[in-house]
Amino acid sequence: MPGRGRASSPLTKPRPTARGWTLGGIGVAALIASALLGRTDVLFVGVFLTVLPLAAMISVTWDRPRLGVTRSFHPDVVAVGETTTIVTTARNLSGRPSPAARWREFAPAGIDVQGRAPFPRLGPHDARDLQGRDTTVLRQEVVAEKRGSHPVGPLVISRTDPFGIAYAEYALGQPRALLVTPRVVPLAHGELDVAHSEGTEHELLRHSIPSADELIAREYRPGDPLRRVHWRATARHDKLMVRQEEQRSNPEAWLLLDTRDGLADEAAFEAQIDLMASVGVHLLDEGFAVSVVETAERQLTGRSGAGRTGTLGATSPTFDLSGSDRLLLADLAGVEPGVSPRDDAVAELATGLRRAGRSVPVFAFLLGGTAELGSLAALRSMGDPAVAFLAASTPPEVEEVLADAGWLCVACAPGEDAATSWQRALARQRAVTHG
Image 1 (spheres, rainbow, N blue to C red):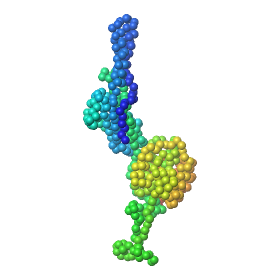
Image 2 (spheres, one colour; image 1 turned 60 degrees about the horizontal axis):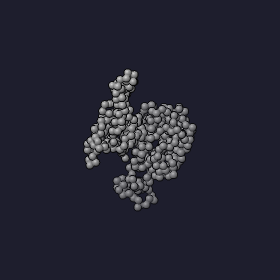
Image 3 (cartoon, rainbow, N blue to C red; image 1 turned 120 degrees about the horizontal axis):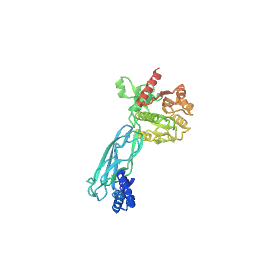
Image 4 (cartoon, rainbow, N blue to C red; image 1 turned 135 degrees about the vertical axis):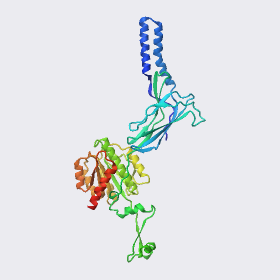
């Protein structure tokens, strides 16, 4: 819902400007001089200049803006590096025209909003006119530079008295969160997104009718009932063909995300998040149900215990429904390095792989070493393929242990995008498969 606000609260309490402090200082000096010299005319000037800044602060306090504020984003969800338009509608709720002022939006680091700009003078409130002279629409385009959920707002109105002696800032309206997701790039198709243990079943899934079992024609074998003869295929192949029913496959993939704190700098962590987001969305587009295990306290939600993949009762967040790519990205937008590392992450991954009942694709995104390295290496037999993307902060022994167990280890260079890392993994997998 858009943020709304009527009453303004002081963000910066009324205070004298540099001009106000100067006039007040001159007034105090004049009062001292009048006491020393006994001059009543100097006393008058001193009193006037001393009271003037106080009167100006009372003026900006009394004539504070009263605005109703709504805010929207177009689009309301963006990826890192993308642009969104902040549309802020302000309506004067006072029976007097709004005073001269300047405006800006309050936003955290990562959302580069514009600086102060002149605020349009609004007419007195008119309840009968919804878009009259009492309303203005403020627009600005901003680039989302940091992943996360960023509260934008309130609207900050700053104003001075007509003589520039006192200054105050007022906050109006409630913040509204702008969701900035990881950067996702398209990834190439290849051996990494097809589980060899499923063979043609996964390929059949891509082309199947969502609500029907596969119907495959094969040659007639002695003993096949004639009721299963596929006459159209028989005419096409000029030999007797029968129908063979194949149950649809429910391919799944597992991701292990290293979210332990202090293993890498912010840039390396963000690069791994971007890589995982791209891989996860790619797998979802290929028809996989994607389950995620985190090495620190769980932050992703997904659908715990998703039933379609046979993980009913499991606690791992799973993404397997329509729109799961958006849910995955929204979850990843808020992931931060965890302060409480888990000692059962690999065990949870092993439980999920055993529940799958067959070898499935496994992708690990690692930032550092782990006490469970041996257990992780031992999961190679349940992963097909089993790929470990290693950040530059990962110790060399991690690659040695995983590679010796048969994992496909891909080193991710600093500043490398997800597509490059994926292409390197594809090339190495092809070399292993066809070598």
